[in-house]
Image 1: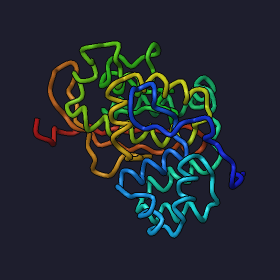
Image 2: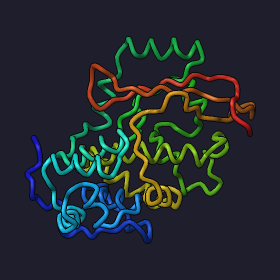
Image 3: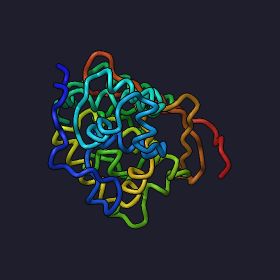
Image 4: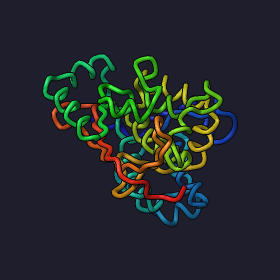
Length: 276
C-alpha cells in the first residue's frame, strides 16, 4: 500500500530541528527533506533549480505535504543523497511498517539450532547477538555479554545502554575506545529503524527515552547520516572489561532470512588496529 499524494501527515507538528531535547521529533518525510536541504545549504530557490520542482511546492513538502513518488525521486537526486539516505527517504514516503513485540520475536528466534549455534560460536570466541531493528537484545551468547557488561534482561536494549544518562560515569566508555565514532554509527542505524517503524509504540517510546540524553540529542540534530548495516572494514575498538586490554572487532550485521524484524550481528575479535 502506498501513501495517497496530498495527504498532510505533519499537520499540527511544527517543523523544528534545533532547541531543547524535548523538541526532537520522530522522523517524517517533510522534516527529513528539509533537514537534508538545509544540511546541503540549499535555499528553496536553489533546491527548485536542482530538482525542477517549484520552491512553493518544496515549501509545501517541507511542511508535511506528501508528494508522488516521482517528486520524491527528483528530490533524492537533486539533493545528492547517498543510497542509505535515499532508502530512508522512500521508507518515510511509504506507510510505516509494523513491528512485532519483543516477546514474540524472542520466541520466534529461540530454536534448538540457534541455541547450538550460539554455543558453538562461544567456543570459537565469536560474539553473536540477535536483535530487533530497535536494538532490543533477543538472544545472545556469553561472549556478547562479556564484551558489553551491563547488558542483561534488566537493560536489554543496546541503544539505551549506549546512551545512558542514569550512570554519570558512562560505564559504556570503559569498554568503548572511540565512543564518539560509535555514537555516530548508533544514531545512524537508529535513524533508519525509527523512520521505518515510526508509528510503532515501541519506536516512539524508545525515541522519547533517547532524546533526553544530551549526546544522542546533539548527534541526532547535527548529523544526517543513515545506516542499515556496518560498512566493510569499519572496525570497532573496545577494551576488555576483565583485562583492560584494547582490541578491535569487525562486525557483520544481516537480516535473518527466515523471519521478519530480526537481525543477527557477528563480531570477530582481532588485535587492536587503531592508535589509542
